Image (cartoon, rainbow, N blue to C red):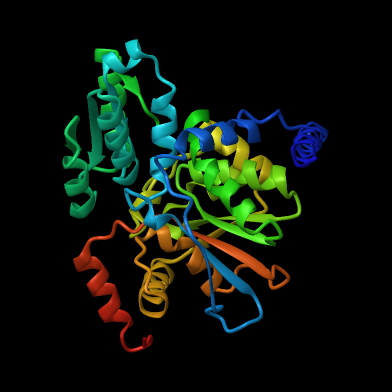
Length: 349
């Protein structure tokens, strides 16, 4: 009966999209369920922890702790799932990818598991902690590119063209999106009557996967995507009616420092998302400090975006059960210490 219900929900969602003049989505709940089967021995079913509302209101706040995954980030899910579907001939060619740091670790873990070589391009702005973790994988060759994530991506795509390596996109790929969507599937299993799910968005892989899972299973549950004000490429694209590129994307939330979202992720987010929220750099720092001091949770900039949206009162008050995805914890200790010292006068344990 439950399978039939989910099937009917999928049909209803497809009809609704067609009725709105929108194309059928490239990722389905079945894709996400398949990814879940593949990932069950690799990724953990992360904890959904209820905490007090930072605003002191009657909202029930739940933190989805993806920062506790083996690489301290949800990125393991999409990278591993896509690589698991490659043929032996494709694996033999080697892999290449671009990353702000967390996706690289997912690719590195999968490359070691499947015994293939991976060349990973990261921008020079990548935190040292993430670089150290990437270097720890035995099958990885690390290339640090001067500039932004987009500069690293350009170098990666040039390598793909010149060598025939298999490119593992950090977000704009249906298998990567399906892998990330397992986060949303878990949330629906853990809290099926959630009123809202708040998800960080950069390139849009996590947001897209979560949207498909949540909206298929519980169309009444709202999903809000959160970006830094300094790198709000998805919000700008939604407002423009097509993917657009920002002139820059400099933010403490380096995992979401993407100038332009993907085509597939834009399609899904524009079709299903209930709202796009932006937060300031100070808001992000406050959320990092709050999570650490009040809840004992380490979050990197991107990982604190959802909490920042709640702390700034941007989630509608009629959403009583709110899930915030804490997407990662790979923050340099020196930066965390600096943020905690800045917040010390205002936050106490």
